[in-house]
Each structure stands twice: as structure tokens, then as C-alpha cells.
Image 1 (cartoon, each protein chain N blue to C red):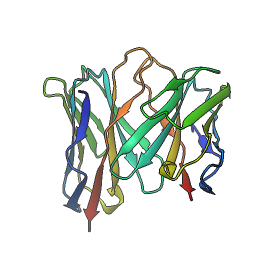
Image 2: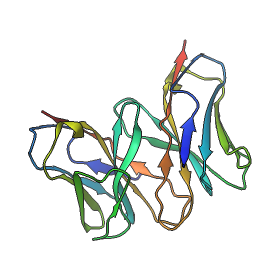
Image 3: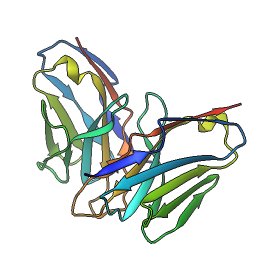
Image 4: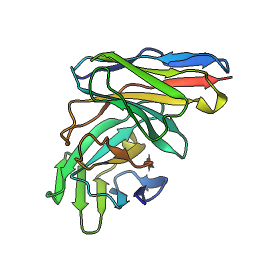
Length: 114
Length: 113
């Protein structure tokens, strides 16, 4: 079974702190994604990556950055956390960009910024 | 503008009935359409994928249809059970380079015993 593991399930951080959300997948997938999910807004794509050291902006990249130094690991960074970044963050991976591939999600990281 | 809409935010049905969820899209040309299930506090889980040249796909009590003329997919759960209660998301795949899937906001289904 494919497994996407997010390092932290629940975090509470202070405004202005730098926050790292880590994600690891164990299926040698090329593609990795970070989404946030808020009530009434659905899943929104923050950043994605199709290869090591590559990254592409999604729909809402402002206030976030990412790092993909190894194929299996994709990190989301909040440089200076703000209260409007309180949300559930979901990491995901898929096999390649040729279409028809399903996305495997992690369990989610609940971030509260106070 | 591009839009993907799931017909209702919430749907309540009685146990044993067929639940039908709708996904409509505008200004997309998906090659594939996928459906996911999400339980509260968990990540979405893949259920079914249907290609643009397929009219219907089945898996156990689940059935998906895809009408590219109407720009619509229907997701059916027959003989619904309380355990089917969850949020169901549709997602479009345009097969255009490396464009990620586009997700609808989901429909929250409650099956009442």
C-alpha cells in the first residue's frame, strides 16, 4: 500500500514563527503536492513538484515555500506564520504526469497559528 | 472562467436508498474524472476513475457516469449504508502537460438509519 506520511498531525505555532511541515512518500512517486483545506473552500493547491529540486506554484502560494531535496520528501515552509494560515494541510503524491493517475493523500496536519 | 461544481454541499438520504451526487464543470476538457471519499479529519481516498471515452464505470455498490456533452459526472451509491456517510470529491484531469488535478469542493453525504 502506498503510504504518505505527514510528520505532525497537530501543531500550534505563534504568529511570526517559521513552520516546517514535512511529508514523506514510500512509493517512488515523481509528483508531490501540498494542499490546504478550509470549510467551504475545498482543497486548494499551494505548491507541487514533478521532480527533485523542482517546484511549481499552485493556486495560493503566497506566504509559503517548499523544498524537495529528495524524491520521497516534500516540505512545506511557512516563513512567518500568520493567523490566516490556520488550516488543515494535506500532502499528496502521484506516480507521474501522464494523466489517469490517482493521488494518494496523507492524513493531514492541523495547524493553528495563535 | 473555469469552474467545477458539486451540486450540493450536503445530502441526506435514508439507508437502503440510492445516493446520487453530481459534478458539473465549465471550461475544462478533462481526459479523466476521478471520485474521492473523505472522512472527517482524514485525507481523501481514491474511489473510481473514468475516462472521457467511457460512459459508465462500476465498482461494487458504486457507479460513475461521465457525459462530456453535458459536462457532467454522476456518482451513485446503491443500497446506501450509514458507513457511506462522508464527503465525496470529484476531480478533473485535463492531461495537459503536468497540470494537477482540479478538485470540486465536495458533497457531504449523510445516510440515516
